[in-house]
Length: 201
Image (cartoon, rainbow, N blue to C red):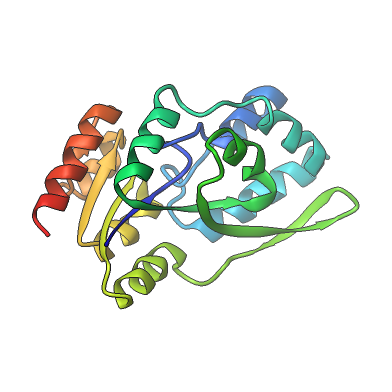
């Protein structure tokens, strides 16, 4: 059996924090792991910004509810689920992802949880340290072949640990640091690279 591990934001759905940044007109929230590769540093930065601007969880959830999957993502995911067991492995939070998961027919999702008090995000709980790598390791311990696809620095550990790793629409600064991974510029190319990787198992 083969498992396809996919990042969520930037691969299947828009970057959630960028959507919130655009709606709230707070440009500091535009930063992602493409800009601040260390996830703890990035999240602490974000929590500081939303506290400074008095933004509630409900406000953020309302903006996320307006989002739709990236064009072509739903069709790609339907194809993927017909050919693989699919796991979405993301650094988002269940409290953010729910409306987007509903639009994608509720795929299996591994991500993190927020700490909330009186509609304020007070912190977050990571599922585990280095969760993307650990998820792939766990699947491999079950004697499964793993193909992984992501778009940013925080996906590299997942790609490294997988039997085959693929970048999807990764920016130049990410690709230049990790040229060993093939690049898909669209979902058609991603399908082809996935099938080519599977054929090598």
